[in-house]
Image 1 (cartoon, each protein chain N blue to C red):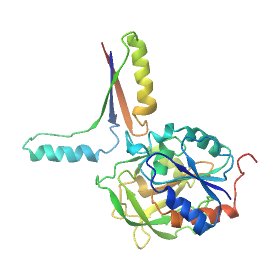
Image 2: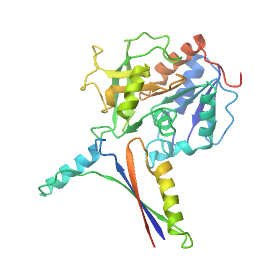
Image 3: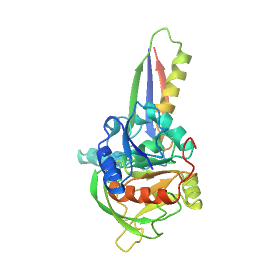
Image 4: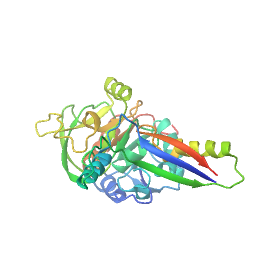
Length: 81
Length: 226
């Protein structure tokens, strides 16, 4: 099974990388883009015997303590069998 | 006064710090490999600049889990002096020994240049031989030097005189143009509430460490194990 963790900058934090990406995308000819925010994505492969609840709890702890910095980032966890 | 310079995999200013302490400050100094856990021989530890763990995940994020960091936390709690320079500042923030975080520079560039910083507080063992308002010209070399923290933390640090250095221009004025990386409130260095842990975004062991050593001779907080 897989736990997926999405780490994104808090809305209050400026994202210069996102701005640079937006600029490049616009150079490609895309219009109507209001904003691009970038982040990080982690796929954590877990033993099939782990319950969904335990997998979610483990991934949330990993996300909180390692994968994200709570000063500047938020995270979201999905569990998939 | 005995100094320890911690070496993480990827530290690259460790020898600079060692050299400055031994040759210019004239104090005993040893390297401390990141897997060591006994800091009882030291009065001050330095987390040097570099790219610990390749800056993987976030700058300083993985060094926080090195065995020595648990000891650094205990050392700091006992009043030992802890100085984080550049990557060391990032590690101290990630480890929760200092508030805030260091993000990508606002212009996304790796900035390697001399900047001016203004001394904002001399009420630390690292800066008490300086005068408030002194201007220092120091090198920076970082891509993640953009200091940020929330409003409450910034207000608290301002109230408690814990912003130690700010980026400024040649006249000593703190302006947006003289802020090389977008740091909030032009912050270049901060200390903890107990004032024995300081992080500094510039990487000049030669200047800032000799200041630290001389200063700490004068006003030493309680030593570890004492």
